Image 1: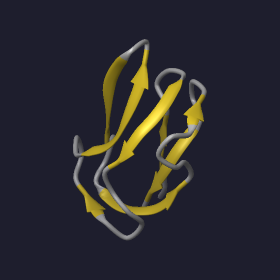
Image 2: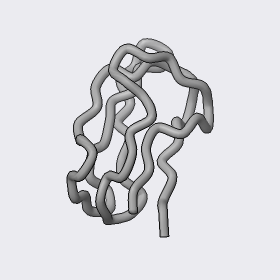
Image 3: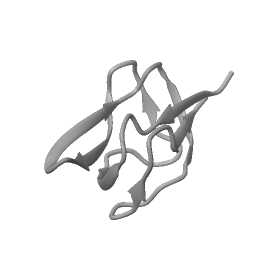
Length: 71
């Protein structure tokens, strides 16, 4: 079963802290999103393996845009 990680708000992806194939646990840091001049950490909602990363560092994202997929 896949878990979708979405942007909680519009902003810019500053850093992606994982790569495809990495194993993560619930609450691991996945990425840093800059929004309203603040850095917001995006945490893993569940444990699993990073299957797909759909954004790159420096990319602007919208609310609920898919950032990555965990299996």
